[in-house]
Image 1 (cartoon, rainbow, N blue to C red):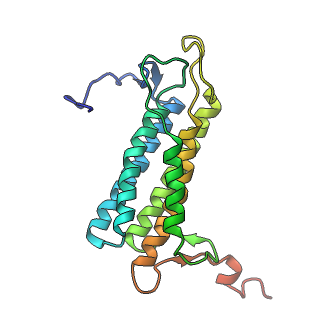
Image 2: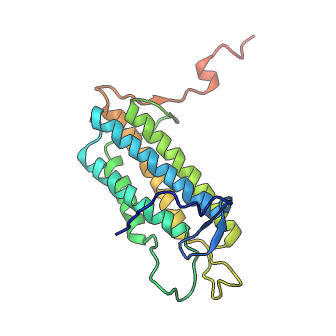
Image 3: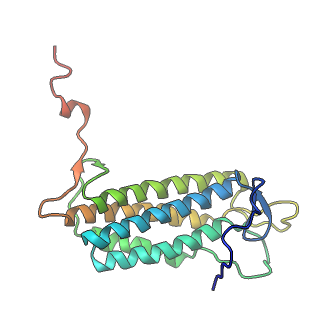
Length: 216
């Protein structure tokens, strides 16, 4: 259980923060940026669920899945904030393969009944579907930030964190990649459920939008 007796601490007033392993990092550090963007993505998923509480376009299984995802994103954030080291004093909270596998299974389960994609899909549709597109892009942004952190710190375990900071757990980044795929599928499912005819809008390339544009 996490107990927060006071919300403001003043410890970050000079541009630094502490990672999970208690090491000090600048608030501009790439790790901090990555887990901050994971938090932002999580907040966007919360908004999607709040929107659905009045529109009810998501089936119960999807709402349950998104609830699990919100919890696991806290795990991912904690993982990204904890450099990989050999023989840690306490067992760290890490993203596990089972969580990635579950995302892939949900992609299959929730995507099987969707129509074949015949063009790129424009973000939008009903409010829940549109917000899930926002969630998808937020997770993609977090994934890119996590890769920047991995480029800076590597993905290896440090034997001596005093000399070499530990790397980034690549499985946490894999989780974000699969999650963005799932959110794309769920946005399609939400828009398909929004009304009798799909709320999904397909991209029309320039020539198709204005077929006479290139004619003399």
